[in-house]
Image 1 (cartoon, helix red, strand yellow):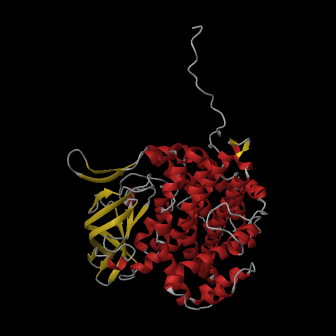
Image 2 (image 1 turned 90 degrees about the vertical axis):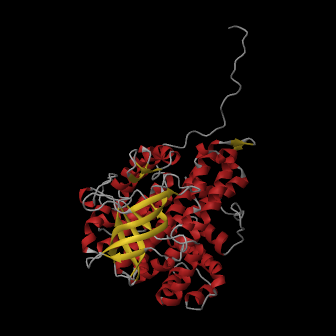
Image 3 (image 1 turned 135 degrees about the vertical axis):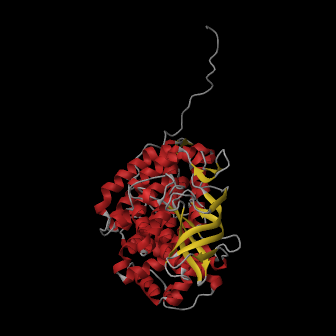
Amino acid sequence: MPGVPSFETHAVDNQPPEFAPRDLWTDDVVLRECVQANGAQAFADGIASYGRLAGDSLYAWSFDAHRDRPRLRSHDRFGNRLDRVEFHPDYHAIMQAAIEHGVAGLSWRDGRPGAHVARAALSYLHYQVEPGSSCPLTMTHAAVPVLRREPVLREWADKAIAAHYDPRELSIADKTGITLGMGMTEKQGGSDVRANTTTAMPLGSGGEYGLVGHKWFLSAPMSDGFLVLAQAPAGLTCLLMPRRLPDGAKNGFRLIRLKDKLGDWSNASSEIEFTGARAHRIGEEGRGVATILEMVMLTRLDCMLGSAALMRMALAQALHHCRHRQAFGKPLIDQPLMRNVLADLAIEAEAALALSMRVARAIDAAPHDPREAAFARIATAIGKYWVCKRAPAFVNEAQECLGGNGYVEESLLPRLYRQAPLNSIWEGSGNIQCLDVLRALAKEAATGAVMWNELQAANIGDAELHAVLGGNPIPEGDARRVVERLALNLQASVLRQAGSPVADAFHRSRVAGPHMLAFGTLPADIDAGAILARAL
C-alpha cells in the first residue's frame, strides 16, 4: 500500500560467499606437491577424485552426521538386548564413500610403492570434512597387518580391506566388508594397560578365549569386531572379539553407555562389559602390548594427518573469509597484521602436512628399508606429539580471523575447535609420546643416527641435538623441550629437502629466529603475499 514503509532493515553485504562446494585437491598445492615428492603420483587421479567428493557431498553430509549424534539402543521394545548404535543416514553415506575410495584399505589392496602415502592423502582429505568417521577407518586400516599373521583370521583381514561398506549386523561369513574398533583402556589403568583386569580364559586349545571384564573406552562400538587387551594365563594378550558369533548370535557383551564427549560427535565411543564374550587370540599369549605396538605407528600417523587436516580446513575457512570481508576500507587479507597471522598459519599447516607425509613415506618403505623403518619408529612419536599439540591453538587463531562468525556453529570452526584436542589425547597423550622418543633413543641406536642424518641432509641441527641423537641421556623432566626441538628441526629439514617456498620462513621463524609464542609474529621482511598465494 502507498505510504507503508518497508520492513527491510538492511542489505546483506560484506559477507563471504558459501565456502563449499569446492575441490579440496585442486585448491591444495601443498598436498599435490607432497603426493608427488613422497612417491604416490601414480595414485593422483584417485586422490583428486576423492578431493572433489570431499569438498562437495561429504562436506554437506557432515553437518547432519555431526549434529544428529549416534544413539545407543540397548534393548528392543520387547526387552531383548540389542547393544546397537544408530547413526544418521548421512553418516553411512560418508562411510560408504570413504571405504569405496580406499581410506581404510588402499594401503593393503594395492601393492605398488607409494600406497601408504596415497592412503594418507585420502585420510587427510576425509578428516578435513568429517573427522568423526575417521576413527573406525583408522582402526580398520591399522588392524590389517596383525590380523594377516593369524591364518584363522585371514577372512577378517580380507574383508577389512574390501571396498565395500556393509553396516549390517551379521556373522563374518555373511559380510561383504567390515569395520574394526578397539578396546584397550580400563577405569583403573588408562594408558597403563598393564593394570588391566579384564580376564581371558582359554576355551580349549584352538586360540579361543572367554572374556570377562570391562573397558572404559571402546572406540567405534558399532564395528563388526574389536581388538581388546585382556589378562590371559601368561599375561596381557591381544584378542579379536567379534560382534556376532559364527551362527549369527550376538556375542557376550553389553554396551553400558556412550561417552558424552567434548567433540567428535559423529563418532560413537562407549563403555562396555564382557560377559563371557568369545574372542580369538592375536599373537602370542602374554605379548599383547607388543602386538598392539605394531598398530601404533599406523594409528599415530593418522593422528598427525588428522591434526594437519584440521589445520588445513581452518586455514582455508579463514582465508576464504578474509579475502571476501572488508574492514577499514580494504579486504581483511590486505591488512598487515592479518596478513602476518594468515601467513604464519599457512607455514604451520604446510609443515604439519609435509612431516606427516614424510612419515607415511617411511612407513611405506619400512618393510624393505631398515633406515626408513628406524626413521618411522621415532619420527611418528615426535610428529604425533608436536603436530597434535599445535592444532588447538591453530584452530582458535583461525576462529579469531572470522571474529564472532567463527564462534557460530554454521561456520564449521566450532566443530574443528572441539575436534582439535582429540588427536593429542588419542593413541597416547603428549607425555606418552615423549617417553616413547626417550625409549627409542635409549634402546634403538639406529633411530638417533637416522634422525641426525635426516637433519643433516638439509644442513639443520646443532650440538645439543647431535648429542641427544648420539645417545646422551635426556632427563625425563626435560623430554618435552627436547622433543619439541626435534620436531621443529625435523619439519624445517623436510620442508627444505622438498624445496618448499616456505622452508626459509619456517626455519627463520621456528628454528633460528625470533618467533614468539603467538601466531602472527613472523619477521617483517618475510613475503606474506607469496605464502598466502600458495596457501589457497
